[in-house]
Length: 321
Image (cartoon, rainbow, N blue to C red; front, side, top):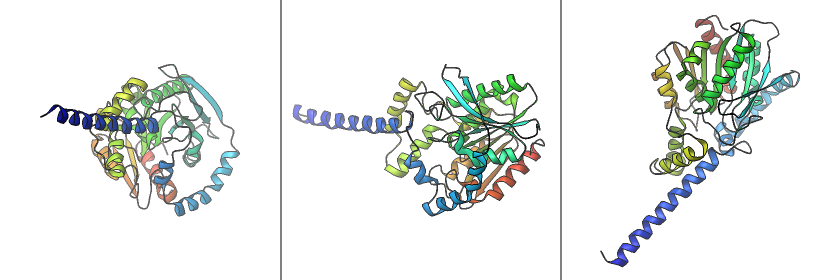
């Protein structure tokens, strides 16, 4: 090949490499850097606008109930030094059980009002977390479960230090929060301290969900974009999106019962990820697919079925309902 031809090839390759870096940087800025507001992408994937209007109208009594509650604001320090925040609401009568609630990406603790009230009504003390880089918690980088699972361990330590052995602890999460709850099962310390996990629309790993979204929405392959993205994430946030997964955690879980919930109309996290999580779980387990449920909206689509399933599951696995 001539020198001119070589230069042309080099130019094309250079332009291609630059394009890969640009796309990876856009994805990185959109997902890893602390979000300034609720992601419009997530809003668009949540449910169709007509359904959302209905959901919001039906949630008005829950909003009113939330406004009447007095939450204790708690701050602890994560293993890596950042300050974490949570809202604590004790049940009216001490029944010796506590639910730790994890929200989704770009959300915050109080956005889980439906689940806060549902567990409160079941007699649970509720600890609703602001995940790192969200709400009142510190952090420049989103953890997508890979970092947050260690923060959950810190919150469990806090509960034990404050209440001793007098609380049966369950974990509940939505989307990224559900992924966090499942990933936390990889810790032997967490497994020793909790009684059950409820995971609603969890993805299997950040690498898997971003690869899926790139292919579905942008018609781009995972490689080489995710490889560059992972280098950026490791360099800045301290982790790779492919270094851990719910599947690994569930394979290590040898004792904790798991309820997996997913809407069959979830346009963001595919239902097959729920099925993979269910198959990977080696302990007592249940899978609920909610007809008509969008991403994170199964509880709003069919609240009666959702709460009934939670109650029956928790009752079956240890009298926790």
